[in-house]
Image (cartoon, rainbow over all chains, first blue to last red; front, side, top):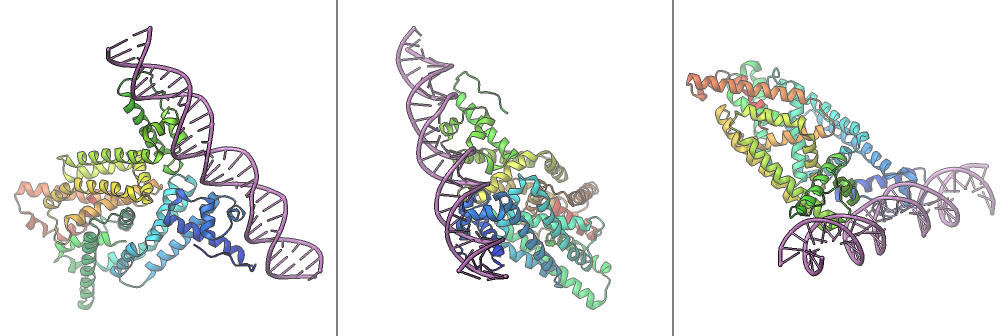
Amino acid sequence: MASPVPHDRTPELRRETEQRLLDAAERLLVEIGYAAITTRRLAEEAGVNQGLVHYYFGSMEELFFQVLDRFTRQLIARQREMYASPAPYPEKWREAMRYLDQDRPYQKIWWELQAMAWNRPELRSRVARVVDAWSDAMRGAVEQAVARYGLRTGEFSTDAWVTLIVTVNEGLILERLAGIRRGHDELLAAIDRWLASLERRAARDERAGKSRGRAKRPGARRRASKGKGKTDAGA
Amino acid sequence: MASPVPHDRTPELRRETEQRLLDAAERLLVEIGYAAITTRRLAEEAGVNQGLVHYYFGSMEELFFQVLDRFTRQLIARQREMYASPAPYPEKWREAMRYLDQDRPYQKIWWELQAMAWNRPELRSRVARVVDAWSDAMRGAVEQAVARYGLRTGEFSTDAWVTLIVTVNEGLILERLAGIRRGHDELLAAIDRWLASLERRAARDERAGKSRGRAKRPGARRRASKGKGKTDAGA
DNA sequence: ACCTGCCTTAGGCATATGACTAATTGGTGA
DNA sequence: TCACCAATTAGTCATATGCCTAAGGCAGGT
């Protein structure tokens, strides 16, 4: 429960109350879901009078629009930051996987907003924008990984890889939202092993000065299964 | 809009009116989402009087419980039927992928029910049951495919494969629900090519009487990338 | 001190909602 | 035909909801 609004009316106050309401909406998305949020429940959570929803946003609908806009901006910025890291790809993957367990409120907000958007055509483009940004943010990292690990991209384009990685992540997040964990540890461990071995081999190849093309063929079979892991590792 | 209820009171009438209401609820889940369904909207859609919701189900909550139960039973039966087919794995995958575009109402219902369950702990176990059944239904087919195509399972257990396939499917379905198609065709085409080549090679190996172990090593590199495809093909 | 503009409050209003109920209807069996 | 029981109707009720408004409060500027 937020504290009452301070009574000094500085120029920042408008943003303060607006942000309070938007923050409260996010907390309630996590706690009770979009369908259960009312103006009174929201105002109570924000520690302001119920009339302020109308004053600042005009309607609940507009408030949700702004919740979605603010959230998507934050999410996109965060994904760009994560994938801009110079760390090798397995590290990026591990970082993203850590979010699976540590970032449940964030994920809940995102998927509650999506569920709301399923029935609101005017919101779909905004949702699509985030997924596009996510894909774009990781594309560079995936391209580098594919090149570094000498994985063939002839049959699997970068777009296919990226799509695979994104969809796997989405599926994992959603299952956890529903309390499902079956098979997750097995999958994540397998991907991790595979990525680690790809990275070790790439480092070895660098030291030996070997061309990757050559390095692939001897362990081709092993790489095959790992190549799968790479697919998974794309997140 | 359903037609009015017939006026002959046979012993089947109770089931008739109940089913009408449950059918109407499913249609509305597709059309307006769970959050917008009211007793009056539902009764109108079912062509019955609004008081019958209380008479037959006692509450909207109980009605949604029964919608979920009925739907999950149907979904599980259908998945079992699909994966029980003796067709080779690529055909099963293609059958499942055809559902991506042709079965949008079905998918919408399922995900609206899931979104509802995110905020209803008492519904989570039911949702989890469906995902478990889905995984179980496809496990046999995946195991057969792994064996037939000579793919290593040492690093990727069957559980990992199954989880990968399920999560990819979930991600694809959800993106389409939000109107997102980017990268889907590329991914599905790549998986299809890879599965087709796996199947051709398996058939050739059968005719030639070669052991799969031997057959893998020459094309090891190609198999690697296809192994990825197989990962994708697991759906 | 006064004025102005913005913020906030304390309700109020019209409508919607889930749940409910008494009366009526209709089918079946004796 | 009559009696009985289940199904249905036609509202009703208490409460909730989104939206709104007039009045008051407060800070900053003159």
